[in-house]
Length: 339
Image (tube, rainbow, N blue to C red; front, side, top):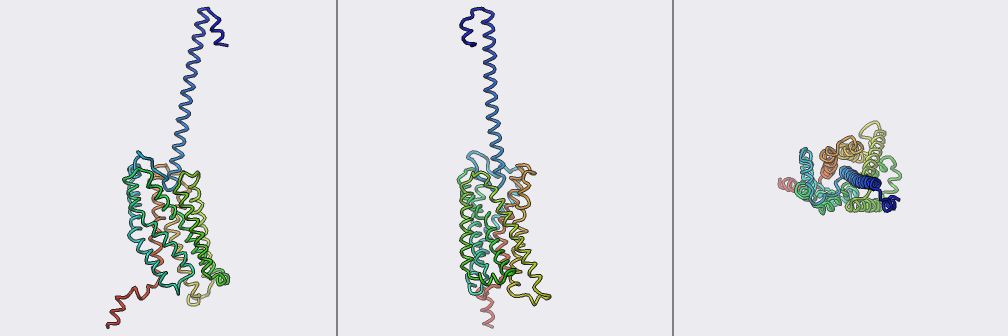
């Protein structure tokens, strides 16, 4: 209508009005374009913020080429990051030999091993692989900005994130042995435990592969649910075991040898739970109360640093309760025979 009237009307005043309307219309179109641009930028900013939240919700997913390194992003609070890398290298220098000794002891003591040693064996294997990553992690945090290294690291992170599943199996085995001894005797065949270990490995590898792919919506909730569920299950089993051991008899000497061994295992598991796995359980649900920078550069590395350090704590505590075979004390034996 407006265009058609413009062609018919020749009055200068009316033509001037048409020019005025055209200017108003042009300004309105420009304002709409500006609003659309602003809206798109706002959406992009929201997406970026959500991506940052996803980044700090769990172990980092990736780092785009051209961005700053993780160390540069946390340059205002580098102390915790340095502490975290120190723990990772302690894992490498102490955790690898300690876990290898655990594997050797389990192999040497096949005839007199505990039923839960099969889960300890697989847990030690997992920890040996995880303890190999500190050099790559150091290079990725301090020097590299490429995303390719994150694929490898995320896979190993996935292995470690799911390691509480093997601890849960150890707790379950000890719980059945102490609280339900008749059922434990019926299920003492190791084939049941081998099948359970295979199932756990399938779950762990599937989780690690999914984590390696990355960018799965709400995937961080899987870790939260897994760590909370494993923590609650282990605490329940250990409390039930300790309660049953307390009811064993009036004196310590009357406690059954199997229950004594289970008690030692319970203390080891409780120590690992409290020291290594309680921080992420206690801190991650309150992520929204921390600023993104504090959570990414401080809380994140404190929680995962303590959790990853279990790769050293677990074998050390296991070795502290095990009697070393005489073949390991060859020097002492040779000296005794010479005398």
